[in-house]
Length: 288
Image (cartoon, rainbow, N blue to C red):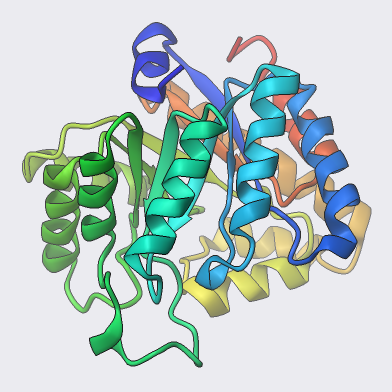
């Protein structure tokens, strides 16, 4: 099923992101973790795509396994930066042959050893969206950044680029993680004012370790509310307590989002079945 149809049929959805292994050595353990999450029967699962496409084959394999053997709708990530057109089209053919109908089209992270940009076939996610639309047959999603993309100086430019991506054929958006819901509410108002009306899925990260939040801030500069900082300061040195507090914080975020009309939630599970299971359990009578 295409996600645009799912969003029409289900008032609220809960989904999980998983990631493929970096190499074959960890494939079995990662596959097992994704299967444990699939057994929770989420509305769909997304499977990330390694930087530079290094795990692209595994993305296809895991997406296929989740959908064929567990009946979970798969959303395969696809990145384009530093990729040749023939590689992207090869991956699109593989995904189609695997029965995958949904793609999250991303530019991808810039790697230090990337080729000269003048040699790239793609520079922006909107170009990949157009390419997938030309290929045909897929429901196309994209990423959005409630706090602004790290490479954008002005929020107006960021929203303009987002509008270009939607106009190119992006049918829904998934947000980067955020820890203050008011940031998302403000963002939604601004993009609606700009004429962006596609469904927006809220991306939520249950933080289960102090080191995890340090890395998040280093990579994305995500704003941390004082209330969240207090939780990390108090429980960060106690792993079990931090996991419980982090899941509780994420759960409260989700309940507030649902109460305010943000009906589609995507959990960045970090391949942790126990985290996914606890979040789902906390929402068992809220999202069915």
